[in-house]
Image (cartoon, rainbow, N blue to C red; front, side, top):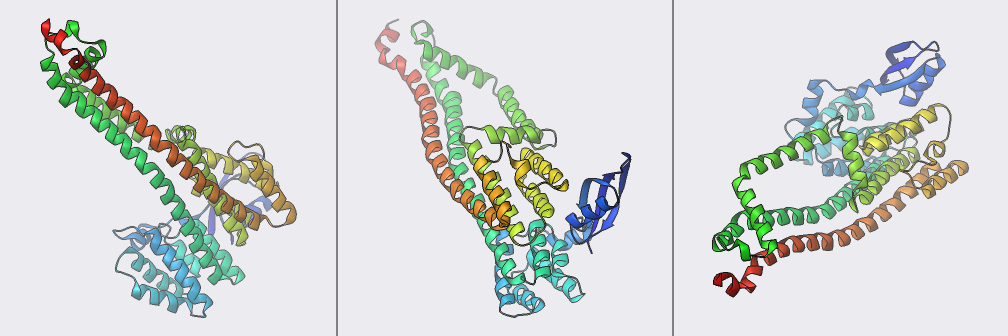
Length: 406
């Protein structure tokens, strides 16, 4: 049985720490409340692996998401066809290429033959099988629906992979245009413009003001290139390190949520991921508290994590899911109303699943709209910068006779 480490407070306000054995996180919280303890933090110890287990799980290569999707889909079909689970996994291991995932399958088979439950064997490899996957399998073992649940896992992982690829493709083109724009600008200012500066030397009094400004900027860039290049690189590196640190993570998440065009797409991606995960888990029979905890972890955004923490705290006090979500700026009101309707009808799991599907379609439309909007904006910006430099360089040529005469 899994063990959970907890931090709690007694009725007198005293801080308490310890471990408790329970079938799930919600059961552990219930046991602690029964002892008069107010739970502050609760963590499953089974998710903490020792170095030897990590070595078995990963080796030198990471397990790809496609391997896990293929594993879940094929294993689900074979189990529903009546093939014993150990035999099915052994067959897939023989067909798989040598590498990290084959070592994972080998260890899973060893654990199954030693009498471990399938979910416990998967939990030894958190880099390959995420907590959501393990919890779905654990719920399926209790309900006897392992085959269909594995296929549901495969569908969920496939949709998540496709969403991630779609968002990345939408971002790649604008980033390429931005890099190209910066590269062309630096080339013009540091290589091409100095050649015109030699031609226009001594004629500064008759040169147009845009050309003079451009020549001054070019002269500064070429003279002090070590200063601005090192400053630029240092700023980028320090900003990257800060935004990825614990202290800078909230700032990075806030910036991502409030960027023009991109922020809306990022927000819908996080909302889709969280609610789709929650719906899949609840519909499979996983407890609400466990489902909310996993939805929090998959969001990977400071503000969404805070929202799910508030939800979890109020669920511990007996409230329904829709209550803490009501009025939260991260969740649209119509989604809260749909969740409330699902709670009243007793169909919360299926409603959350349909909400996730709706958000997936909405996200797809948002990505397409954002892509169509970003491309012309970036092209206009690049054209404006490059065109302005070109015009400033060519302006003296239009009045070349007057420049040469003086």
